[in-house]
Image 1 (cartoon, rainbow, N blue to C red):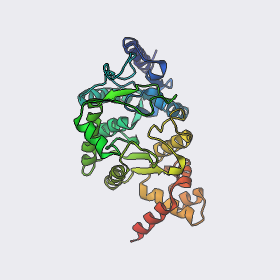
Image 2: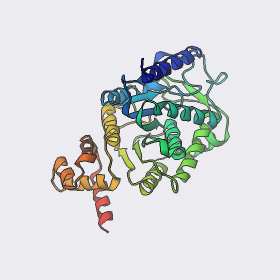
Image 3: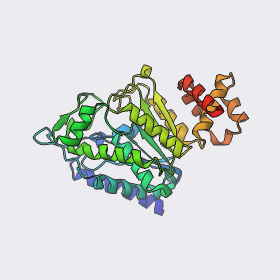
Length: 338
């Protein structure tokens, strides 16, 4: 048995043993691993959202596995534990960021054993973990995929409550059939991610070596869209190979954007955009140039060829440009011309 086979078998067994001691809330919350019988060119490490579980990254994990990558989606500390949780008996979520940061770093080290390049990603607070990991360990990470990262909430009053008041909060969508995580949480457990989001927003202004693709939705009621747009502009300014895409309201994609079961009827479109970024190696300016050429009547393939980008662009990028706001492309072109 090869060292690689021993390593992957050990990863699966250790996760299984740990989760059996919790006990686990349900099978959807178990860590998800998609391993090839050999190391791969790219390894994707994903972090699920707050109070949720690895089930959020199962659809994209399967797609990226089929594309030839190893994928890991570990269950986060304090998550997925069976119990009668409520305001008097809240779920055992950590209230110290070090627990999450040590967890994320330990899984980064695991991912490095499974292939050549590591791509990190996450939804909401999981996006915070991925971004922080990329900021602190840029030499070990190729790219980051941030799905609706939690820079701050969409409501100033809620932000104040998260910062100050230690109450129990129950999710409004707790009865969603696609939700297999906790119904609620003690506010201090979320506070650490709000603080982390604000800190990483400041850090990228001067310290961003890892390209990031930030994907959000105009219909997302959980996060502050203005702050996230500022964050996205800063990532592109500091690292030109960063991208940003926001789904229009017409798609009606909620904060829980990773799966159809949680409300994203365009799950496959989201996955295609993520795959386009993973498999491309071009700047945001070059993305906009391709888009502008298409607006001038050229086909995607012709535009890519004339810009000498064929070897560095995934065909899936054509999908993103097809649904992208055309005015955004025109404005970007005018800015480049100015």
